[in-house]
Length: 364
Image (cartoon, rainbow, N blue to C red; front, side, top):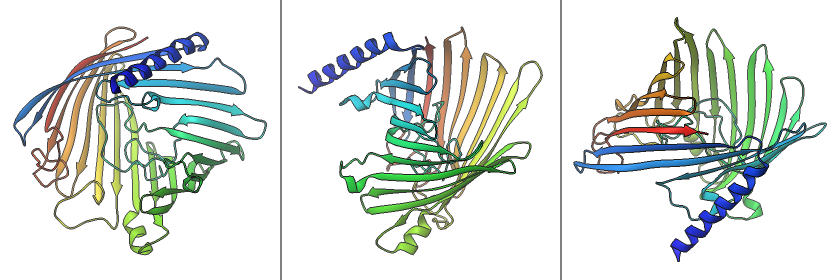
């Protein structure tokens, strides 16, 4: 029965895709085939995964006041049980004389940061449950409706409503923010409230972004509960993130991209000892991308926990062989002791100590 349901969902998705391709102006299909070899030191075992994914992006025809997009995604390692599992995006944007309306399943970018972003109170960008081999480290989408009201050339106010998982009106997610530019510094502040298992949370935040020869950004937020020890829980939830980004142009069409981000919890567990994802007082994210040519690039990424001197790192290469065909490879490695956040050999997690991937991607 379960197999028949999955087959029906797959057929439905294919039919929707084929019918939408006719109306779409610029359909884009992306296919990644990434065989991976893994090693787990705790069990001294090797494994092999065939990680393949397919993405179909359907953009609407260019209109003056409306546009939309549907993106379908599927991965060989993620089971499909419902249409929402493959429906990554499905939204429209409409421009009225005095405001802009967005509706559907998509992602709104609040705050700044590629991996760590304390200003992202809508989805949360303060955990380490990401794949460093992905081009887009944070990609969660959700069903929402938002209204954006321009207040000037570089200022606007925005409100957003997101559907609750419980389908109860009282659990509706609500957020609002204000965005402006003051003396070439972007200033953003806002608030979101949501229902969690422990009760309703209120999350104010602010974010700054500017340029000092390099791009810099800083964000901070709190999660204030309605019940319990409000002061203690609010202070423990306080997070600050920041970073800088700089592109260095080199001779012969070469370039070097530098990025460094940090996340800190001022009231986190600063004592020496085991560090967890939820209470790590300090995390660093350095990224280095060296483009040897327009078609060949090398990347180094790490998530570092300075308190226990552990890290998860990847080294990767991407070669654009033809116009839409790429070959890619990467090696990831955990370096830490058994009780560390990124342990080489740990009995508490089932994560790989080492992995090597080589594969290809095709966009057409």
